[in-house]
Image 1 (cartoon, helix red, strand yellow):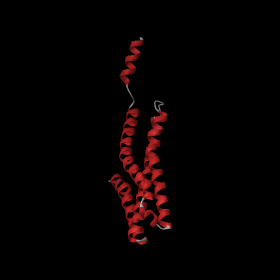
Image 2 (cartoon, one colour):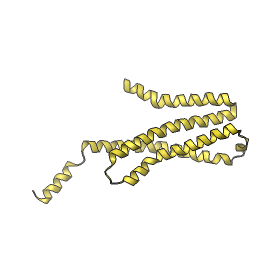
Image 3 (cartoon, one colour):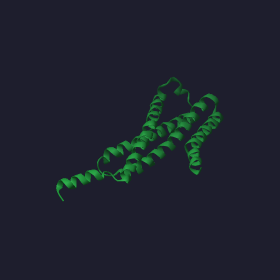
Length: 161
């Protein structure tokens, strides 16, 4: 067998079906993360400006606590959504695609959960300021229910069918 023959057969075999599947999974996951990343970063940026508004001084202790929890959650969510890009940078060309897809999937799922909680917290804060504590709690629970119904319930029902 010549060196040319070995090179040709290696070139024609190409990536394995498993490798192709991992590449597709990675590409789909990155696209989903891109969609989430923009919204999460905008929300975090907006929340970072809130203390510099005139109305911030009017918040009571509970509202400030809610704000700080929501801000912290938003920063954590941003970190989780961006983490897969950092994983990829660190492991670039290290043949760790399976680990990357698995870790990015976990990061995305936890990030989505955090996003639902943070969004619910933002609604809690705004409705608490406008309508009072009861209105804030009701609106927050409604938003949280909507997120989990659409993001978890609907796909699980579709999977059962």
